Image (cartoon, rainbow, N blue to C red; front, side, top):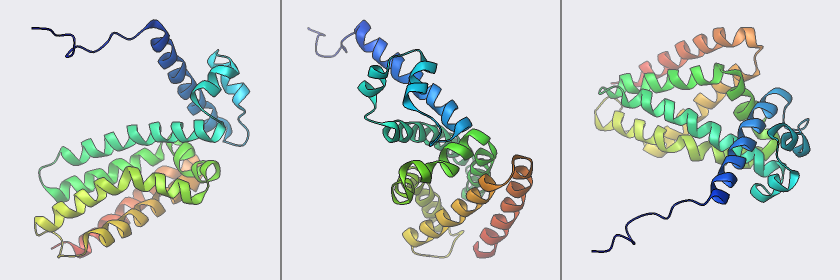
Length: 206
């Protein structure tokens, strides 16, 4: 029996180097975008800090906006994994929903996340593309949570898509308020947002 078709081809050294270069660019760009902002960060500076050539940058990303998009997507992928884990850690859908909400608010308090996703994201990508990107990452989990709450009889039979959309807007508004605040005020606004959201959710729970 031949196993040639069932075994993956070993990655070449060139492919490994390409992946390492892309990872170095993303890590360096994340730090620089968070510290300086999108407008004040040049691709040549990212390349220099990552110890790669400008040609290597353009091999992986067509321009600065494309690099920023990749940075934001990686940041959101990591963030949503944490939020999803918080939700799945609870069998009770209400406890899971509240844990996910708090995990999101905790994430926004992190200055790098707030800067990359909420403060610089709309500037770098434009409002419409940024909003679509955010919905891409968050909408599925929010709909899953709303569906679970309705199925468990903890929410009245509200329209799932509309309820998820309203929830997304509320969470996003709280996130923006936290991100826009001075660093020393973010924890307080996070706690206030958590209390307001908990009371709003509690008001419609069955």
